Image (tube, rainbow, N blue to C red; front, side):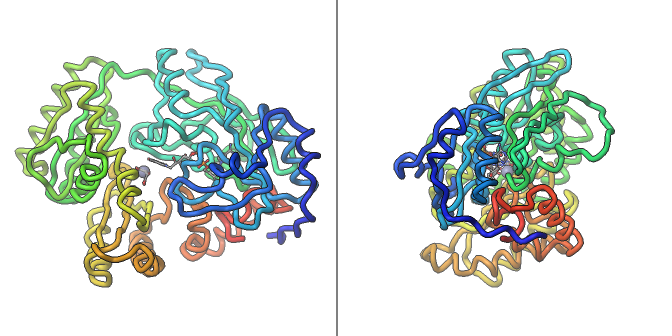
Amino acid sequence: MNAPTAPLPPAPLDGLRQRFSGRLLTEDVDTAPFLTDWRKRYTGRALAVAQPDTAADVAAIVRWCAEHRVPLVPQGGNTGMVGGATPDASGSALVLSLARMNRIRDIDTVNNTATVEAGVILANLQQAARDAGRLFPLSLAAEGSCTVGGNLSTNAGGVQVLRYGNTRELCLGLEVVTPAGEVWNGLRGLRKDNTGYDLKDLFIGAEGTLGVITAATMKLYPLPAAQVTALAAVPDPHAALRLLMLAQQRLAASLTAFELISDYCMGLVERHLPANRRPLAEASPYYVLLESSDFESEAHARERFEALLGEAMESGEVTDAAIAGSIAQSRAFWAIREGIPEAQALEGRNIKHDISVPISSIGRFIDETNAAIERDFPGVRLVVFGHLGDGNLHYNVSPAPGVSPEAFLAHESAINHITYEAVAAHRGSISAEHGLGQLKPDENVHYKSPLEIGLMRSIKAALDPQGIMNPGKVLPA
Ligand code: FAD
Ligand code: MLT
Ligand code: ZN
C-alpha cells in the first residue's frame, strides 16, 4: 500500500465552513459526544465535527480534507462496538457526522425498495416501511440510534439474519462520496445486475475506510400476519443446536430468530435492569429465544410453534418453555435478550468477542474455549449469548469477583489469544458482525492470510491513495 502522505499543518477551519451548508461544531462542549464510543473504551480528539445536509456538502468536505490531507472519520449513530467511529488522540482528524442527512427519499411498494439517506435512524426506516405495509427486517437493540449508513458500513447483523441476511443482503444500491470528493450515484433498485465488479460491495462493511456512504436503496419485504415468540430452557448449547435443526425442519423460512442466552446473562439483566423478570420459574444453564413469522394467521403460527416445542420437550432438548401470549409479553422476552449489552456495560469493564464458527461447531467451540479460559483464569465470568442461528456468538469475559477491571484487562491479549485460536481451529471469524474498527486490525492481520491482507491493502491504496479515510481502522495504520 502507498504510505499515507504526511499531514500538512492544520488548515484554517474557516475555509471549510464556507464550503458546505449544515453545521460545523468546534466547541468542546458540542464535539464531546462524538469523541467517545458507546462502550466508553476509546476517547479521541478532533479538529471539528462537520454535519452536512447533502451529498454535495459531503463531497465538498471530502475535497477540503483531500486538499489539506486531513483524516476523515465518518460517524452515524456512534453505537459501534469496535471504536470505528472514534478519531485517534492526535486531534488532526475531522469527524463527519451524517446525522442531519436523515431523509427518506422514496418508498417503492412495487419494487419493494426504500431509498434513504445515510443518517436515517434504523427504527425510522422500519416504521416508514411498516407505514407503507412492508417490512424492513434489519433489527438490533441499537435500532433507536444507529443509522442506515452505519449499518451498511459495518454490515450489521442483528436478530433476523437467519431469515433475511446481513445488511449487505438487504442493499441493492448505494450513493457514495469517494475519497477524491466525487459523488457516485449507484442507487439502482435492481435484483439482477451483472455489469462488472460490484462496487457497492466494496463500500459495505468497509467501516468508512474507502468512502462515505450518503444514501442507499434497501430491500423491503411483505409484513408477516403474525409473529410468535418463545423462551425455551435447554440443558446446554448442544441441545440448543438440536432444537435449531428441529425448528428449521418444522418451520422452514418462518423461523426468523434463534438467539442463545446463558443463565449468567439472564442474571445480569435481572440484576441491572430489574424491570425485567425471568419468564421461567426454574433456572436453566441456557435458554433459546426463538421467533416465527407467519404469513397466514396468529392461530396458525401458534399451532405450529406449540407442536414444535411439544416435540422438543418430549425428546428432552427443551426442559421448559413459555410462549408469549401477547405482543407485550413478546416484547418482554426480547427486552431480556436485548438488555444484555447494557446490563454487561453496567456490570463493568469486560472483554468482548464477536465470533462466528460453522453452526455445527458452536457446541464444541463453547465447551473447549470455556475449559481453556477457566483453566488459565479461574473464576472469570463467561458471558455467552448471541445469534446461534447464524453461528455467531458474543463470547464475552468479565473479571472474577473481587478482581479490579485494570488487573483483569491486563490479561486481555491472553484471553483474546485463547478465544481466537479456538475460532481459528474451527475455521471461524474473529468479527462476525461488529467489524474491526480500531479494536481488531492487528488481530485480523494475524488470522488472515498475507494474500488476503495484501489484496485488502491494494483496494485501499487504489481508492484512497492519500490514506485520509478513517486511517487506522480495518487495516493497521
Ligand atoms: P457508527 O458507530 O457511527 O459507525 C460504525 C462504523 O461505520 C465506523 O467505522 C464509521 O466510521 C462507519 N460509518 C458510519 N456511517 C458511515 C457512512 N455513512 N459512510 C461510511 N462510513 C460510515 N451490531 C450488529 O451487527 N448486530 C447487533 O445485534 C448489534 N446490537 C447492538 C446492540 C447495542 C445495544 C449496541 C450499542 C450496538 C449493537 N450493535 C450491533 C453494534 C452497532 O449498533 C452496529 O455496528 C451499527 O451498525 C452501527 O451503526 P451506527 O450508525 O451507530 O455507526
Ligand atoms: C447483540 O447481539 O446484542 C450485539 O451485537 C451487541 C453486543 O454484542 O453487545
Ligand atoms: Zn449481536
